[in-house]
Length: 427
Image (cartoon, rainbow, N blue to C red; front, top):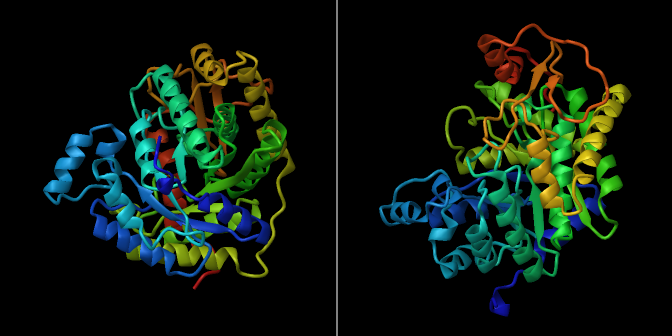
């Protein structure tokens, strides 16, 4: 049993509740550095912004893959990694790094990317941190070759550990709404996020968040944000404390300063207008390098300013898009839940049957019988839905998918924001 002095104080949950009640959009970077001095400095600089912000410790690729020895060698050799190798530092070193930084005014979340994260969860707990993210699907497909069955078993263990240590109140965020987000219909992303938080709750976790990533059409994004909230109210138990997290676009990012600034600002406006409570922010150098501390601070200040500008121009929700997304996601969730009373087994069966089938995902547990497309206006649409339980008939919306067209779809937002001058509302 962990020493009582190491148990976190639910800073994250209380922080979210307070700002949710006040109507503030919380901003959060995707930041991780391999050396403790840099990681500590980055967190301190973020905390000193004086805005509703959460700190992030993003882990490195070695740690995500369970290659802890290589991460340890990198620490000893002072090599630069693409994140913080938390497991390879001693627990007391991690706690010392966070001393005087993490507080009720500045909670911290670990973000990793591992399908088999038991040691990451244990290190997070022992480092006195009460928020983490991921999921048995969203951190397995497409990030690994680990069978979905193995990921589900490990995530069950992680959830039980997380729930037992925090009395169910330590926070766990689903990454399901960002999975292959740029070329995945929003109804499937929403379904996966809802199913993952049901999985978390089934294993004792009562503080969760559902995620959704900015796509390629703002009207579709707003409709999707409304749909994910509607479905959360429908499917989540009343005793669950939940909120919605929105992500700045996760795909191929604009390469110019102006284009990157515009898409970042647009994500802040969408998060605020769509009723999200937290925004995961990217930076203007996303297309070129691992962002610096300065890059992250700049993006956080922009998004905070945009989201809190009054009055923010209102946009009507496209009701046709909303009902289409809601109906599709509702049908998928119902079909999966009907497969088994055990949510983990239901999810595994859903992939075997093709009820869950992610376009363009080459993971061996995926059926690969679905395809999606981006239409002229940037809406992500099903082209082939395979055995995914969608009743609504679909019109053919695109020509044959070629490698050239696929590259154009992947570059849709990059070309849009790099070439079209949209109005900016932040200085």
